[in-house]
Image (cartoon, rainbow, N blue to C red; front, side):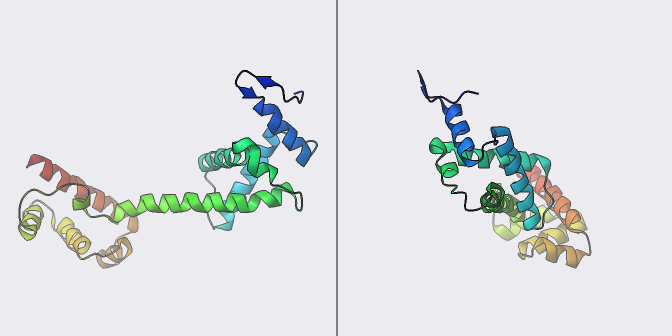
Length: 187
């Protein structure tokens, strides 16, 4: 594409600006080439943190980093001073974005550790009476699981006490939440 910075009715020709900047960095670098380099850096960051890269997450994070690089008239991309290769320069940016992504995922996973009453308001009854009423609706296994959750044990501790896999704890907690929610909806 010809590189001109002509004004359009909506402002400067933004695509030409990006291409001009890419040509300053490397004469043969295109937007597609930059996206490939970003994707490589994201896959590197996943491996750096000991994870296997999920293709959809790589694509999403590549887009996030591309937007970061080109927003504000390519402010971040313009900061590349060619003291190293573009690939090397992108790696810490990708590591930072992947780390923030993992932290966001961890926040979502931490919701699994909340007790059922964190999601649903309890009816007007004393706490112990309410718990005893709920227990009457549960299997012995679910009653034991509820007791361990109420004691504040982690998923790992519950798995150890009940001698079951972590996935089984997760499924049992979801099943327990469902039963408690149904009970509360019926009240």
